[in-house]
Amino acid sequence: MTALAISNIVLWVLVLLLSAVVLALARQVGVLHERIAPAGALMLNRGLTVGEPAPVLEVADLEGRAHRVGSPRTDGRSTLLLFVSPSCPVCKSLLAAVRSSASDERRWLDVILASDGDRDEQREFVRMQGLDGIPYVVSAALGLAYQVSRLPFGALLDEQGVLRARGLVNSREHLESLFEAKRLGVASLQQYFSSTA
Image: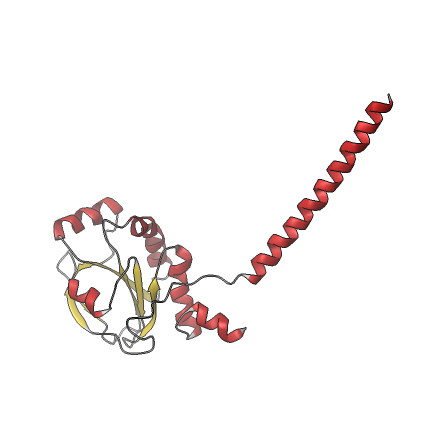
C-alpha cells in the first residue's frame, strides 16, 4: 500500500512540475511573439529606389490588351506588378494569395502579373493556375526596367506612377507588407520598425 501511495505522490509531483513547465513555455512563446516584428518583403540592395518615378513601358498582355505600366493614372488606382515564372515553385504557391489580394484590394489596386519566355508556356501556366481575369504580360524589357533578379518579385506603384514598395515576395505576409509599406509611407516594414524602435 505504501508503494502505491508513494508512486501516486511522485506522479502528482511530476504532473504539477510539467504543468509549470508548459505555462513557462507558453509565456515565452508570447514574449517572443511580441518581440519579433512581422517580416516584410525582402528589399534587395540593387534596383529602383522607392519614392522615385517608375519606368514607363507600354506592354500587351496575353489577351492583346495594352497596358502602360508606370505612367500616372487618372482613375486614382495603384498597380501591383508581380513578376512570376511557370518554373518557379514559390510563385505557384503564392498565386492563391495574389488572387485573394486582387479581390480584397480591388477598390484601389490593379494587379498585373509579368514574366518572360515562351508565350505558349505562359498561356498554359495562366490556364493551369486559374489566372483568367488578371492581366498577364510577357516582356523581358519590363523585367530589365525593374531590375528583377529573383522571383517572385513585387513592385507597388501608386496612382502617380511612383514606386512605393518593392521586394521579394515569398508569402502572403510579404505581399501584404507591400500594401502596408505604401499605407505607412515607408520603403519597407523593416524600415518602419527600425525607425520606431
